[in-house]
Length: 224
Image (tube, rainbow, N blue to C red; front, top):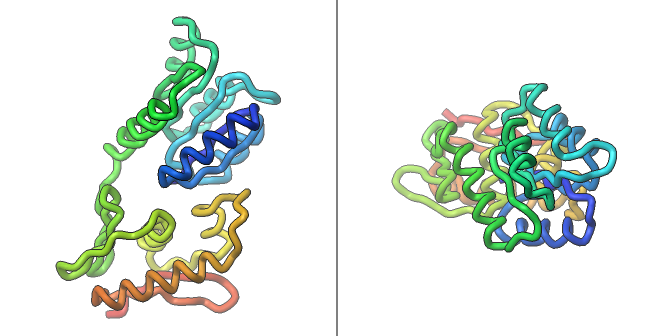
C-alpha cells in the first residue's frame, strides 16, 4: 500500500514515516500543501494523511482541491484543531477520518488500517491473470494449489505487473510507484525483486513470465 503523508513539522513527519514504513507501507512525505496536491495529481496513492495547518496550501484546501478534481483517494486529517466545527468542516469537505494531535502511534495505525479497509471494500481482494492469483489480504502469490507469501515491495511490484498485463512498465515508473520519489533506494532493488518474482513464478508452475524490454522496462506476458 502506498501512502502520501503531508506534514510541515519535519520531526513529526520523519517519526510518522518511519512508523508507517515499519508497518509495511510505502510512504512519500511532503512538507507543504502545494507539494501535496502536486504529488497527488502525479502519483497513485492508496491513502493520504494530511496535516491541517501547512504552508502554501492548508490541508483542508488540499482536500477540497482533491475532491473537486475527482480524486476519491481516502484521506485522514491530522490536526491540533479539534473543535466540533473543525471536525465537521473536515468531514464535509471530504475527509474519511479525523485524528486530533497529539495522537498515539497505535491509534494512528489503526485509523490508517480502517481507512484502507474501507477503500478495499470497493476493490477485489484477489487479482487473477492466466493461472496465477494475487491475494491482497494475505499478500500471497498462488498457482495450481501452491502459494507463496511475498514481501511488501515484491507484492506491490507483482500487483503492478498483474494490473497492467502486456504493458511495458519502465523502471522509473516502478521506482516512483513502489519506492517513492524521495527514496534512497538504488535502481538495483527493481532487478533484485524482478529476479525473485521470476524464480517464484517458475517454482509455482505459472503460465506467465516477466519479460525484460531492453532499455525500457518489464512486462508480464502469458506464455500460452
